[in-house]
Amino acid sequence: MPDTTNLAPGDGLPLGRDAGVRVLSIDVRWNTGTETALSERIGLAAMPLVRDRVESREHVVHSNQPATPDETTRLGASNGVVEVDLAAAPADVERVVVLAFVHPRANASKRTLDEVSDLSITFRDDSSGREIARTDNLARAIGPVTAAAVAEVVRDGDGWRVNVSARGFEAGLDGALQQAGSRL
Image (tube, rainbow, N blue to C red; front, side, top):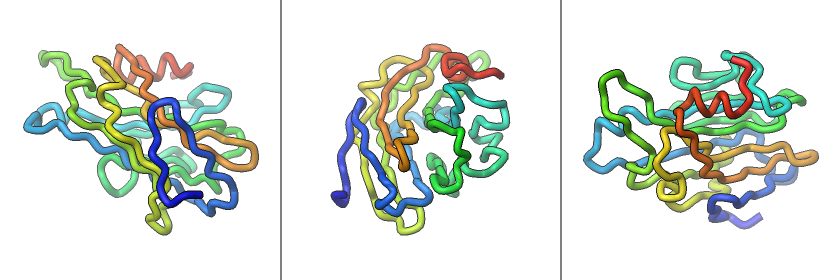
């Protein structure tokens, strides 16, 4: 496997068992320039899916629920990081979807992800810190939406693969959960 692979929306990279990645770190970074109000409203969530459905509210990882009950999908120590324990993930988890979203605020103007000047992802082996893959700026590919699936970690035979996405959702995190078949 090359040291670092550059991925665009629609691209994927098999991790394979020989890659030795036990815990995958997905570092999502955004830049809003001088827009601190927008920066403070951007959040990250992750959803492990079983048969394309979220099992329960406790399985949606975000700032108020920092890990799944089994802790195999969790927020990292740094803001904007999701960690997926590939070695310990339950066998029925087919994929983990990582979403960026704008928190809604009462009486505030609607903000969208295309107002972000840069949104990029770095995939790392959590134990060694080795960079596996990265993306260029995904912000323009996402468009004027309030939530977007930006990455997926997908079971691939005996291993896993990472896919980069830019699939947007108009109704924020709740809309993404509904479209992901959530039973919430």
